[in-house]
Amino acid sequence: MDKEFAGLSVIVTGAASGLGRSVAVELSQRGADLALVDVNEGGLEETEALCAENGSKTIVIPTDLSDPDACLRPVAKTVEKFGRLDSLCNVAGMLVFGHAAETSVEQYDKLYAVNVRAPFLLFQQAFPHLEKTAGSVVNVASASGLTGHSYIAAYSSTKGALIALTRSLAVEYWKTPVRINAVAPGGMLTPMATGTTVTEDYDPQLLFIGSGPREIAQPEDVAQVVAFLASPRAKRVHGSVYSMDQGVTA
Ligand SMILES: NC(=O)c1ccc[n+]([C@@H]2O[C@H](COP(=O)([O-])OP(=O)(O)OC[C@H]3O[C@@H](n4cnc5c(N)ncnc54)[C@H](O)[C@@H]3O)[C@@H](O)[C@H]2O)c1
Image (tube, rainbow, N blue to C red; front, side):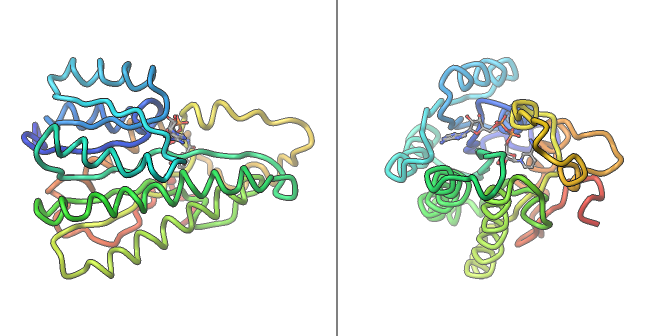
């Protein structure tokens, strides 16, 4: 497993924070060349420094993934820098927490743009390159795309859509060497989880419906699974949605 990504080039979106940063650091320990994509430029630079400590070659590509035109650039820049693409890890995501009846059209549209359209557009750009390298796609969905979760209805629906997208692409491109999978984490201790303010107008009985009795996962735990699915060791894993929720959807 040591340096199993040596000579391989990987795009990680959402790399400025949380799980995306952990995936980038994990892959840098395994020898990958990394294209780090996020809207948060300062966070990207911090991640780049962490990856450089592990000896990785990196390129930072600040990108607002809610802009469809901007989604056309990261793959071309990555291939220009590293000459190839071996994996696309779509980790970036956004959450809107609140009562479904109060979610605005703007919030709903932005959730879909970042959580579903961006992975789709990046896939379109990446596919011809991944076909050449027998590469892989890993989409980060959520346990909330598999079961109902209160107060994040629109977000959950984007993750359900991302799971359907993953499975549909896996079937459509079955006869190519490209592997396409998803990870569906449960609760993870990242800024997305800790940055959500819960006030008393939320019913605690409904609020914790999606959490189980085990300790919340750290992003480093989930990064192990993303890295495995992205790696050549997962060569027979295709079209899977890997639950990483410690039993919640079981
Ligand atoms: N934290 C959890 O409990 C949890 C559970 C299940 C799934 N997830 C998923 O894990 C993934 C990583 O989230 P996280 O928990 O690390 O949260 P996070 O907020 O720490 O990281 C999300 C990253 O996505 C980036 N991003 C958001 N909007 C963007 C945009 N328009 N353009 C480019 N980048 C953008 C953010 O800047 C941030 O760096 C997300 O897809 C999230 O939905 C999180």
